[in-house]
Length: 182
Image (cartoon, rainbow, N blue to C red; front, side, top):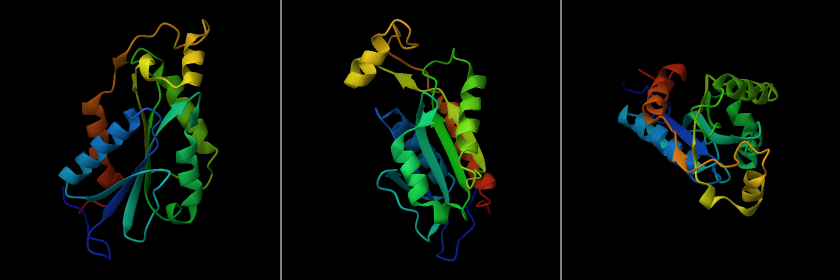
């Protein structure tokens, strides 16, 4: 699928990501690779450093959700770039549940509720994917939370439940959703 040119010549999609442990960064890179395979020019950057420029024809924001909220870097990216994002197609990808056995309906509801709080943001696509979990790489605060008997992370072993085929299939829908496909 080819991308329709913008005034600058090529539609460029910004893939901005926030990631605490690197899993969401890896997912964002897979999305960017899928878009490149379809002919898009893609900029990939951490949300804390990313800026939407005039040459961007669309934006994908990838962020994990922890306890129903996106990372602060992602929230700050949205606010810092609000003026541009109000006029561009935006897709939001979240990594939230750490296991494919979790209730995805509840996860989708959390995503919907978080996006509803941003009344100005109207994503053309929004999806939540299962992530990966490695208790050996947690920061101290997260280790304390995971050690609590009431924590849903208590006793959870290392695993990676990311569905790469589903992630790439979702990314492949973005050109049409963003009206960038020729």
